[in-house]
Image (cartoon, rainbow, N blue to C red):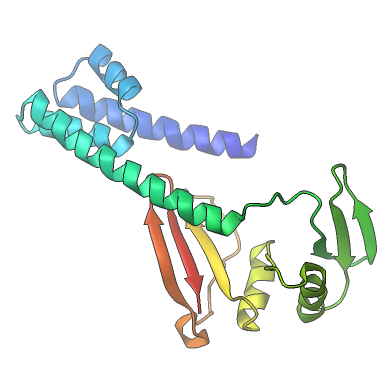
Length: 203
């Protein structure tokens, strides 16, 4: 519910700003609603009304919007390949999952996934995960504190960051005080979308 409310507020603010700019550019409320309905990307919508507001023709605005839409489509195709590499082909179901916790126990979920709760330090948890994965990759998830520990210990080979322009109000910093270049990390790939910037950081 909280996530849905945050998205609704951000989308509503975006819609109000677009409506105000569109009407100021000379479009009617009906034309603004039709443009918002028929034109998918927000950047294309703002480009169109920007051209109209500057005195350009609708055809020039449509051409500009089409170019931006094509760019976003190409970004989407590239992002799909990146996400496929990050997510892997196999499902997360029925994979052994190790969770750092204060109580040592195992919990089997519906579908066959077994959670192994580990009480040792991060190195021990990673060793157990590597043993369970055999020769396959190990994926580390969790809160910022967990990721920071693995980064400081130099135990992460690659990291996917999705940076979204949303103000959360409060939270725990992920990279504060961590010298990524000093630890040997660099940005290997980056893909921009309207919703987020995706970075693949590795060493």
